[in-house]
Image (cartoon, rainbow, N blue to C red; front, side, top):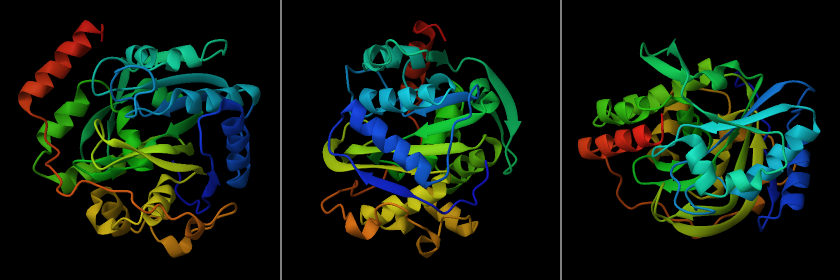
Length: 309
């Protein structure tokens, strides 16, 4: 994907109401110059971590996904949806969290990321990327704003980690557990090999204090868009009042001088972040290593096998 864009669209949305969100998505996409061409293959890539009941706070909200899917279908896109969750399969998590139900009536194909393509990243690492993520015409990244016990906060860039297929995700955690900077560097490397598109942020109800699984709800009340995920990470660090030096991913972006890493270079065609301070959003006081416990890794593998992956 190309990272030249510096426009970030932000709107206030206080509740998960499909019609209101769909209208906002249309305005957000127009604000950053994004359109869906009729017949184009559009892949929705939400944040799916686990399947623990409907509207799990750890996952992108079903109503937000429905609104984005409706908008893409109305534009004439051939829409599919997929992710590589930490636990279980993509379709299994979508079923458990109410996403499958929310998408009823729409021509949206739910995908398992069980087919992959080996890609060599700029840092020299070979990684298996889900084939649908590489072969789509437009990748719609749909992260949830969350605090993160290992990476401080998870925003737009981190959500692309879900394009890494299946069991390789916990392998990365195990391999780079004591080399967090290397882990962050590889995640940023993913941006260069993935197709372009847009990031649409579910920031209506965020997760704070801890995360990315067991945090508490924080009513952030906004949605946002950009064709450059780096610009969105920079923007939300500003809105949330967070120290960018604690975000390894954002630090990697600034070290590479990527477009969007400088807040002063950004443009806001809708609301300005200065009008939207999020007082009280809290992150973990102490960060943990990114490594997975080997036992946890085996449990994850067993769950994937039971899910039929």
